[in-house]
Image 1 (cartoon, helix red, strand yellow):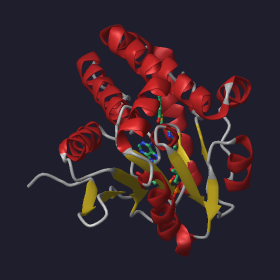
Image 2 (cartoon, protein in one colour):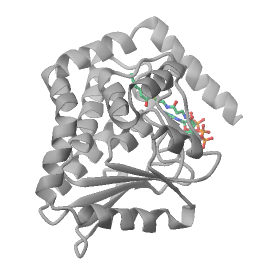
Image 3 (spheres, helix red, strand yellow):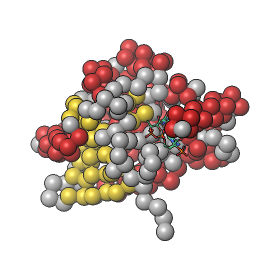
Image 4 (cartoon, protein in one colour):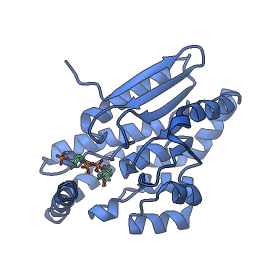
Length: 261
Ligand SMILES: CCC/C=C/C(=O)SCCNC(=O)CCNC(=O)[C@H](O)C(C)(C)COP(=O)([O-])OP(=O)([O-])OC[C@H]1O[C@@H](n2cnc3c(N)ncnc32)[C@H](O)[C@@H]1OP(=O)([O-])[O-]
């Protein structure tokens, strides 16, 4: 039986679906996870009754640890290419969604986890000091591609993005609120009710006007990736399979294990 990485619960009375990422221990985004996620988004997009999605996690303390590093380490160029296409697809489906998307960030959210959150229309994060969010790729010795960077620019602006990306910054909830990476903080017990009430405010806007406005804001970056999708894959594969980058990933994974021990 195929493993399920996400639970999707659709409420037909409100037209809102809740996607709960459920891949312990850290909701890392594997090829299979990303593929399932993109299919789920496509199904919801085609469901005329679904107008909004709340994205959250059922893994305690973790929203998502980002891309599964083991999918990029010691793998063939073909595998890395397939993996990167799945990352692109996840982003295209989420960032390009015509539905209202709200991230209820109930745990840490580095790198690809942060990308998922900033690809939504609105972000609410649990106000717990140990949680963090940010695009920390440089800390792993890797480089976030232009569409990660542009998604962040559209969220927090150019200067804050440059600062954040170069240093690979991870922000705690109050810092994330201050820089604009999240829109609102909430206590853990009220996170989902607040996400639902924010969703109601967005649902009150006529869909067609909101959708055209959203597309107007986001289409330039989406089109840029679509125009050079295969070149972006080749660029990633060439970069990630370099010996020096593989070494950096290995050291980072060892650091994670040591931290645990
Ligand atoms: C150009 C490309 C752009 C790249 C984008 C990315 O997203 S790059 C990704 C950038 N992502 C990051 O930099 C995030 C790195 N992760 C973290 O910072 C922390 O794990 C945490 C804060 C998410 C959770 O802390 P915590 O103390 O609750 O948990 P813990 O630390 O004890 O981990 C439990 C187990 O999960 C394992 N594992 C963890 N993450 C990943 C992963 N991404 N993948 C695979 N495995 C991962 C970890 O090794 C350990 O395995 P073990 O020893 O049981 O076999």
